[in-house]
Image 1 (cartoon, one colour):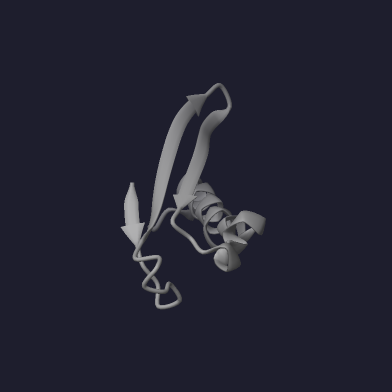
Image 2: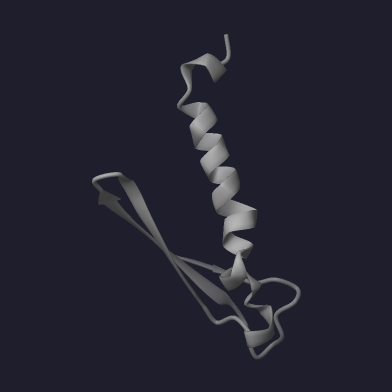
Length: 73
């Protein structure tokens, strides 16, 4: 769990909290994100923000890290 604050949060929303749950599945890992304490007008993450800003980049990183051809020599 992580608490964080951005300059866009008003005093009413002191911190938002993110809980990241990782569960093993037969095909890999299921990632569940629970994000609370966010104003209704700042929930863009629910409509692709998490995918665009985090998960696509993480997926690319780990795909490259797992490829022996991409390892530094």
